[in-house]
Image (cartoon, rainbow, N blue to C red; front, side):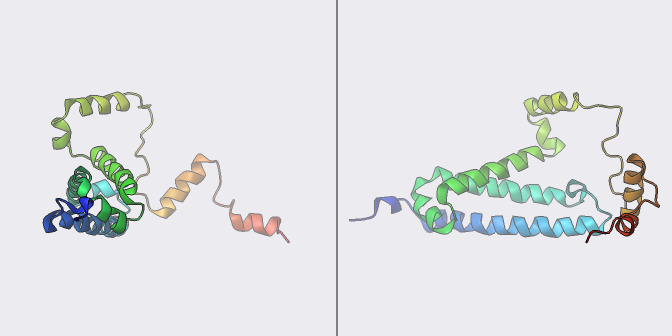
Length: 170
């Protein structure tokens, strides 16, 4: 008697499970590499990296592959064997990747969904516009420390070394 769980499983459909696992690993390594490049490029935000749209492409493929797997219940026994936490972990992780993709869509992608633009406008209208939220972005460590010290009324002579000399803990 044939195993009912294996009915409809093909080599091509099994490829989706393996591809999903490979894509997740690739995505993690790609994000790590790009984060390092961003630091070396003046500590820019990941989204400002000129090849960041490629990350979105990988995320989109992860989501498409994961959705295919979830739609094919005959693959569930393989998911249980190949992915720690099984189908439930796949669902949870896929949800995170889908949210990441949605939150980082390009303007062209956003234009295709007018509801998304309205949601973004609603959120953005609630910010205090008297303060520049990007102030200080990309500063080097010395400039950042000077800015933080000024905001906290700390003079450059007030240092942790002075505190250690005046209040040694024994």
